[in-house]
Image (cartoon, rainbow, N blue to C red; front, side, top):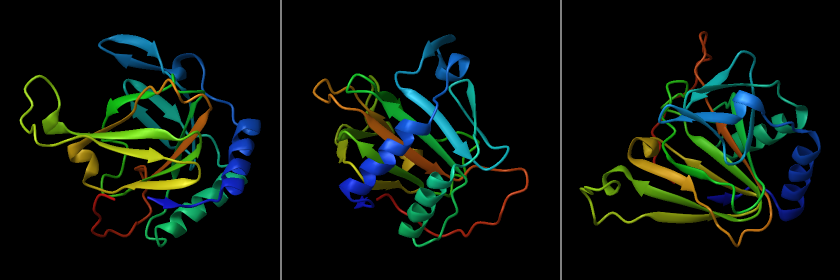
Length: 207
């Protein structure tokens, strides 16, 4: 994890998003669980290259065109990763306070380039990001020695999930009642396209 933006810079990006972004409503603000459609416990939208979509939990989120300020953020994130990857999609989640959350899951959808990292930029309220190994979940835990890992995500920080993290670790942003301020999270991704730009492959590890 690294500090990508100073507090003043991060606050400015937060305000830009607050002032300009319209979040999904209706069916796009729902996911399917156990055969039922439920409201996502946070606000969400996406931006990216033309024609890209992201399908998860029974829903398909289309990418809106990149606004110039988000392209600048994307370029800075790419530069922080030594320009080894070109991100073509960003999913934005807005958490109004500590009651908004995201449940335990893995980002292993077929739309994603599984060889690419996912770069997560946090703005606003500090929230806990919790990892739990797939073998340490459920009623019959095979690896009781594997403890969960909690990472506090602070304003302006960049956290990178490199492969094969999503093959083995579930992650979540749990409810935190004491978190009284909003948080915005931008997860930059490489999505598959029918005609894909060649992207360099290299060995990555969890960081």
